[in-house]
Length: 78
Image (tube, rainbow, N blue to C red):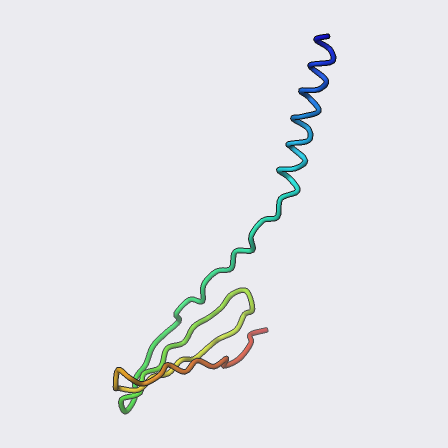
């Protein structure tokens, strides 16, 4: 009787272990890192580098608070 109970317990733990290992893991991406800023004639620029795609983005905005922020991909690094 104890052998059957031990085998059943081992089967339950093995099933739970397989179930836990089969769970999907979320894909975690790093945020784009700010590289530098500059400003000229009331227009501000900010450069970002994204390491997963190896792309550099440039964002610009005007002086007024109501101006929208425009971000465009500048280039992809080799």
